[in-house]
Length: 248
Image (cartoon, rainbow, N blue to C red):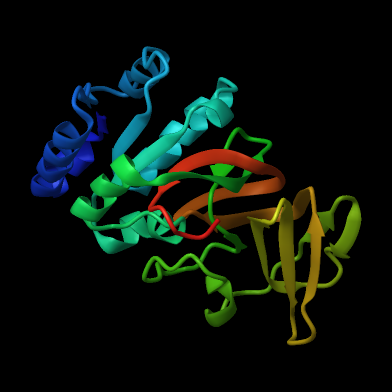
């Protein structure tokens, strides 16, 4: 059980509930309260085959996923999570099927099932569990993880968008937005033209976006600016414990 320090500060009661439920239901539970920037790296390296339960927000989950992916252990290390934090900070966990109530999430850790989830990785060492959108919105939304860029006005972007080498858009024709997400073993990319017109979509193993400096929103975090980024789908790379009987 890995407790992120932010969780203790924001909602100590939920942390206590998670600790009590897991200790009562699983018997011996090793509790690790993270201290310092490298604590998670050390905890994951010493887990000795134990299931890791992240108690914290989406950022805590993403840090664990990123570290395990970097060491090549993500597919063999099932993760569980008890989300702790305000609604927008646990929106990714909710979208992945993890209950955001501390009691329900803790019980799911004990009685749930491992679900294989697709994700995206990028050429800068990042991981993306939900959809990403270009450009990043000027103001934060409510934390929804859908194609949020469709409903917010944004400046036109001059971008080259390639899906497995196929050019969907180029810098000579500005676009209003681009969305990418991993689903059913492939990356789904949608390009919204500007001015308004028919959307272009494709499914591919990798998506490359390049052009003048652009920013993007991934898993409720703003990234960039960058001039080029390639995202590659990793089918079934994440094993996450969710309530039994949930989506396969």
